[in-house]
Image 1 (cartoon, rainbow, N blue to C red):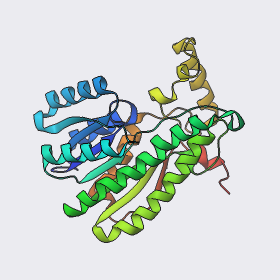
Image 2 (cartoon, one colour; image 1 turned 120 degrees about the vertical axis):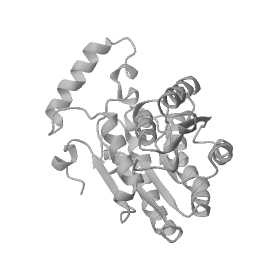
Image 3 (tube, rainbow, N blue to C red; image 1 turned 30 degrees about the horizontal axis):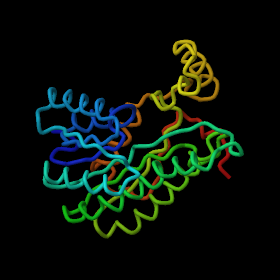
Image 4 (cartoon, helix red, strand yellow; image 1 turned 60 degrees about the horizontal axis):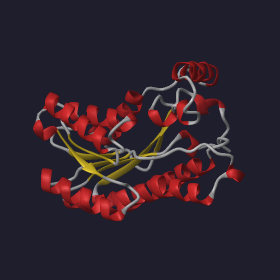
Amino acid sequence: MGKLDGRVVIVTGGARGQGEQEARLFAAEGARVVVADVLDDQGEALVEEIQEERGKEAAAYVHLDVGRESDWQTAVTTTKETYGKIDGLVNNAGILRFNELLSTPLAEFKEIIQVNQIGCFLGIRTVAPEMAAAGGGTIVNTASYTALTGMAYVGAYAATKHAILGLTRVAALELAGRNIRVNAVCPGAVDTPMTNPAQLDPTADPEEAGAAVAALYKKLVPLGRVGAPEEVAALALFLTGDDSAYITGQPFVVDGGWLAGVSVI
């Protein structure tokens, strides 16, 4: 028996990183997973792999640009046509850009808002009615530890993650009567392609850059290491399954203790 037997869950940004691990874990726990992403080749390859391991019904892929309302409508229609219902949503898709706040172009700021904040809003607004029709469900939004504190050079990103916490709390209050729980995961530094230092300097040696980052986090993080995407996936599973049945509207930090030493007041 799996913790998500019989459930249908959409995972956005599911082609790689945290989303990939969430899709793999949810399928292993009995869910039928819809991997939604703009990275079509990677997403389709992941679905084929899950299907080979778990059976044809275990996973499906849908192209989804989370900032586009029409894409959300297509994703919901495809999911219902494939599986008949929707029980869960993991709003995982997001982008990160490093820039000094005063040097951030307006276009860049808007791009981050469109994906991270508006994408989350559209997911909740589009999927929640389908969950309610199915008798209820769960929504897990991916925020960040920067939703609870500040961090230099990620002003636009932090602003959207603060907004996601606000959306999470409001959605939890408004949707509780429809038997829908809404919570947020707040990862710290996690070893995913989005946080790879190579994105800052494509000419950098990946091994040297990775070693430098590992050394930095060994100093900054009380547990002495960067997090693994599988650890975030495990938290998302807890918030999606019945083990968290009396929890809604809450942020859950998974950061190796980083915020324990940082004032958020």
